[in-house]
Length: 97
Image (cartoon, rainbow, N blue to C red; front, top):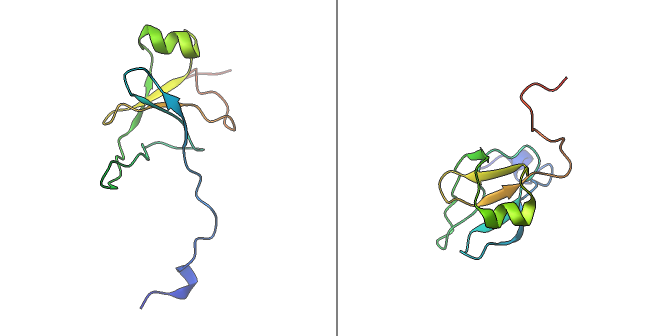
């Protein structure tokens, strides 16, 4: 029998929100705070869980939509594009003084 102390979650877990799609069908989402893995589910309900990698060299359609120096992340498995979270500071530089 499960412990009733842990039956209900203590706090709500933030989820990534859908922003839109590109012309080729690639999904665009906004990251949840401190999100490191893709939370997209396929048709069968299986979680992707691919790592989100910083994406530097993106196609012209993405550059036109978000800017040439946008901070973007892309899932290494399903290739979903993630925008940074608005509540977190930008992670642009490795050394920020």
